[in-house]
Image (cartoon, rainbow, N blue to C red; front, side):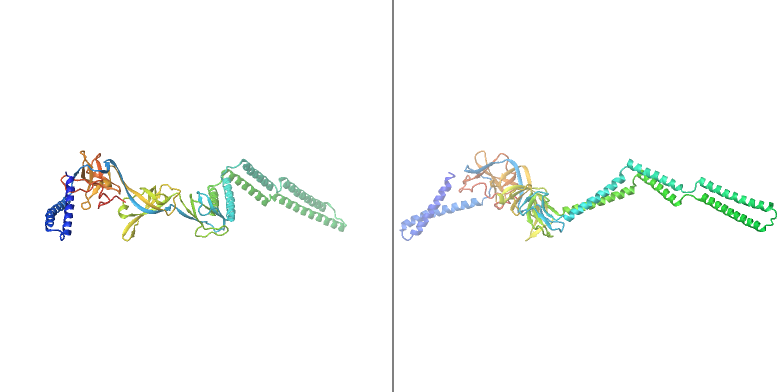
Length: 526
């Protein structure tokens, strides 16, 4: 009966309205009797229509509350369960490579060879181009020779003395001693001095003998009448004595010279110096190098090594190698020409991609380094790629009063189809709640004026009740219910209209209308 009454009233209203229309149209062409009959029917019809309209108006103004509705067609149902809700922030950006490097020679020599072209994929360490290295290679060889010489000198200083070297130095000492002995023997010997003294004695004896003969001759010879002959003999005797005296003087001088004739001082000094030097060399060999000598030798080695390293570095700088696996984006050098100062080869690191998103100031506090991001790339079928927040710019950017912060997101892996410049949509995970009641938003109805929410719960008697609920965290698709429903209850969305007991007109379909995100209820985070 409750279902028929609204239908009957609706039919009566339509019939009365039709009669009134007929009466008005035929008022001038029908008789007074028929006109009176139509008026008789129209007046109660007006009253009934006014009552129906009034009841409908009053019913629409009554406050909404839990209503029990008769069983109707269920469009969709769900069972209240405990689950998890993940809140995300959605932002757009474009792909960029993690590293864009411009490579160049560090020498002004002409380009000798170019091994790559634009679009080539290379591995880290691959040679991309070389410059002329003729002079640089010569410098490396010279530096290597200097280092070898310095190292050999250090090795000789720090090595223990060899037996052969000791024997050689000892032989030098013996040779120096022999030279000294020879030098010391260059003067008069004792035998030479004795012979010279004997000659001086003989000369003296001869003088003495002549003097004695002269004296004897003068005393024992009688007066010779032949005076001339006597005088002649006297002269001969005096001459002979003078010669004897001269011989004595010569002999004595010769003996004195012989006695005073020592070794040659120059030869003796040279021989002695040779002996001292030979002994010092042996002592130095046995004692080893001093700390100062070793330190100086080590400094010489270090200096030579630095020179060699610098020469090798200059040689390496004449070769451009790939610093990472990547893609050759530009080649700005030509064989035989001096490379430009602005850059020779540009490489892109396609193993890692990043995207920069602008995050509103109200959401930036929810982000932190290492936060998970689901990245969607539209150009490759909206495939989802896991990513991570790797940098948050501390300084904001303001445009038209909107304050945002740039956030760098790095892809965890790189698909071979990715290219710089592709559009992306980043879904940043802001937070997750576990072990909570989660309900799809389409099962929740929110009043646009009061912002109060209800769900349609199926009762054990087969009817449905609108139950007020409290909404917690929410997203575009789901919401956390903190109170109002229990695990195991069934929520429904009705497809057909139902009639509440005692009502005159149909109620609106239950569930779904004005859910979170629509009808004034704040939707889930982006």
